[in-house]
Image (cartoon, rainbow, N blue to C red; front, side, top):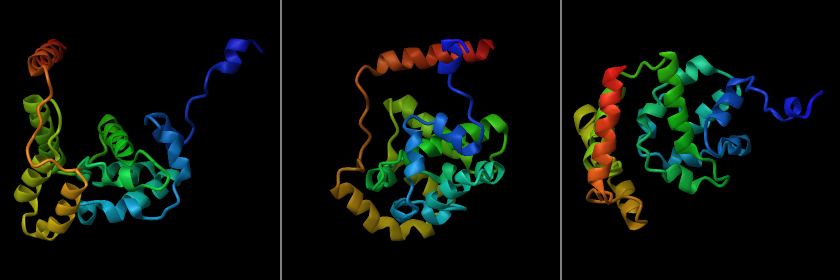
Length: 192
C-alpha cells in the first residue's frame, strides 16, 4: 500500500461521524456525559422538540431523519450559554449550526418559523456585522410566543450579570468593508 493511500482519512460512515466531521471541534461530542446542563441552560429549551442532550443521543443513535426534521437547532438563539456551561467543553452551539446546514442541504427542516429566524439573523449581521442575541431573541419571541417568554426575565438578568448578553448591538469596525463584501456576494449569487 502506498503511503498516500494510508494517510487519507476515510469518509464518515455514520451520521454521528458526519456531524463530528462537519463541526470544528466536533470530535468532543464523543465526550457527552448526557448530564443535561445544555438543556437546563437553554433559554429556548421549552420550544424545542428535543433538548440538546437528547438530540446528541439521537445523533449518536444515527437517527438522522428525525434529528434533521427537529426544530431544536432552529430554536437555538446562539447565546453559547450551553457551550459555556458544558463540563466537557462540547461546541454545542456549533453543532446546532452544523445540524441546520445539514437539514437545509437535505431539505429536511420543517420549522415554519426558521425562515423568519434566519432573515432576522441575516438582517442583524448586515446591519451590525454580527448577531445581536437580545434583539434576535426578542423579535422572535415577541412575534411568535410573546406570553410564554416572560418567565425568562431572571435568566436574562443572569446572562447580563455574566456579561453574556449585550443590551445594545455592538457594530464591528470597518462596516463599510463588510457591506462591500456582502454586496459582492449578493451580486455573485444573483449571477448564478
